[in-house]
Amino acid sequence: MDKKLIIQKIREHKKQPNLRYKLKERTEVFTNLLFYTLFDIETPVETNLDKLETEFDSLVHLACWDTERPCKKVWENYVAKLPTILELLNLDAEATVNCDPASLSIEEVYMAYPGFYAIAIYRLAHELYQVGFPLVPRLMTEYAHRQTGVDINPGAVIGNSFHIDHGTGVVIGETAIIKDDVKIYQGVTLGGLFVAKNLQKTKRHPTIENNVTIYANATILGGETIIGENSIIGGNAWLTDSVPANSTVFHTPEIKIKTQVNAS
Image 1 (tube, rainbow, N blue to C red):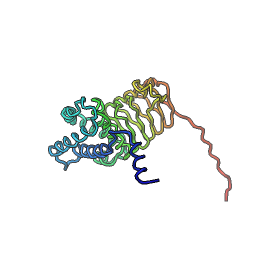
Image 2: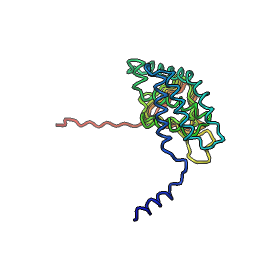
Image 3: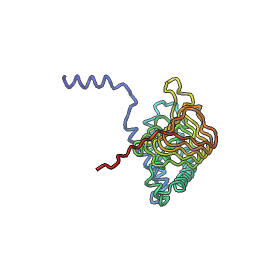
Image 4: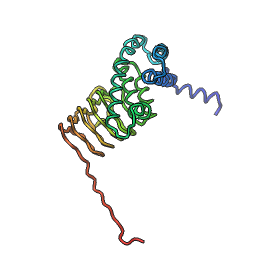
């Protein structure tokens, strides 16, 4: 095929006028700068806040395609919330130190725990999601997902002192509600019972009440599913119905062990 014709055909099929991958790249720069500003002791806060505002301006330019939306005004409100977000994240880090016997220091949690990093980026993205800032919150949490294996939709509502242990394979859906002092382990899914576009504006994901522990590879589905406070959900459990407070839920597989006698 003639090269000019190939170019013409490609151009004909590039149908999204606002699809600029530069937005994805700039979001990642902004996310990294934000994380360092909040946590790295050698990163100057005052200088970085100015840099962050500049980066945010570039996101406004790339993401706010509707000129009627006052995206530029978002920054002042957002930056004012950063101290509160940092306070919440410090509680998350302390929860991990208190829960995990393998954690040797709180510095280790901040620097080496994928669950904490995923929660941090979620909390920073959630504030932008709440004000309707387009696309950037999802790009932020997807960036964390790519690095940690933890997929938290920025629309989820998560309370204080949240702990994710190990993290890989965790999925938390957009309308999930997680209250205070909840602990979850790798492979946990808080998902939707049905997948259909007409459910977009409905609560599709479960509610987890205070002080619940959910062990590895448990799956909890449905917007009406509520896990009552102080409950323990065992590994590999599959739940689509609510669980009363103070419950323990077990999955009991049948395990058979065959041992050869006098095997040489």
